[in-house]
Image (cartoon, rainbow, N blue to C red; front, side):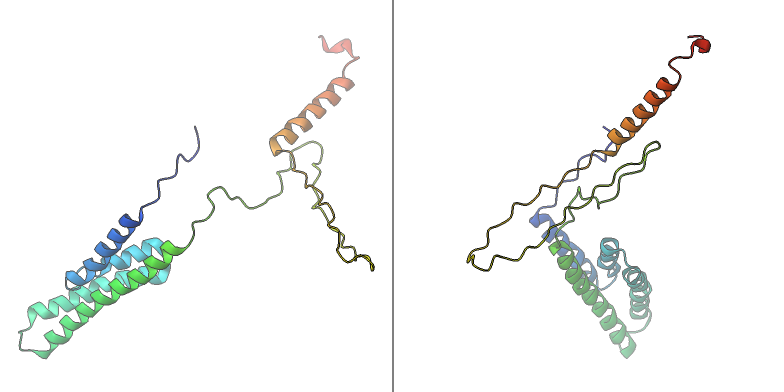
Length: 189
């Protein structure tokens, strides 16, 4: 009721491939104008400062290159270099996106319910016993025994949940208090 809700369903392989094609095509097919789109997708996926910097730097490069192409005559050699640079920016952004996205989707997702082992919280009252890990004592095999006999493994005991320990400590404190004040009728009760 108060949890995070159900996890969204994983994307199918067809959806992932379709998104890859659309993001990769956005940079190159718009002649570099939208070269920032796949780079921003990479920045959102990875969240690294380098990716965000590259994505933001691609915007002035694309607009500057297209401004040079639009403002100078076609016969000027600078327009050729500017257009080649903008197209190269679109192609490189698409290639970088494809490499990062394929690597990202190959990684197995982390186990959704994994919580690292932590000691239970200390409740007020009696100190809580800490469970000790089971230790194994290695015994050398007998000299005349050709096949070692496997030793039974002790089953590790699971510690009680912290809430139960807290309630138990509070009940112990309450019973001690009641024992101390049991024979005193001056309380008016």
